[in-house]
Image (cartoon, rainbow, N blue to C red; front, top):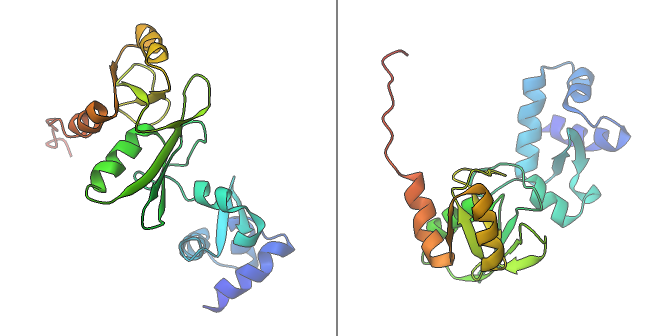
Length: 192
């Protein structure tokens, strides 16, 4: 599409917002949003803090985190991120341990080469499979039910004392998080 080519030419010239491009082309914001989404999916550009950047203007790490969680599509906060590397070479990113557990359940049968996250207290990288988790606490830094990773069981129990929840290892959490996501809830739709 000719407009997509022109957008790629205009971004380095300072047309770095959807509004600026809509004004330039004299089209609606929705038209440009559709173009931008399509171009993002093709890997041609990246949206970062409301600005449009060419893929060549950002690092691979920034491109990956700007694309959002591979489970819920939420933006990724580096302090909670989980990175899964598959034997196939594919890399998946989750916005938090909650979504990582849901992704791992979805991947059942696939071979996971490694999985890394961050210790909630010390912010050090840790092995996702050997971490301890506080699940369903009152602290909700990302998705619910909350799942917060710790390197040490001692730190997990200290956190639990203040915020509640259950302390679990990987195997227990792998069963518990999807279970908590499927608890039936009655919804009254009669008022709609």
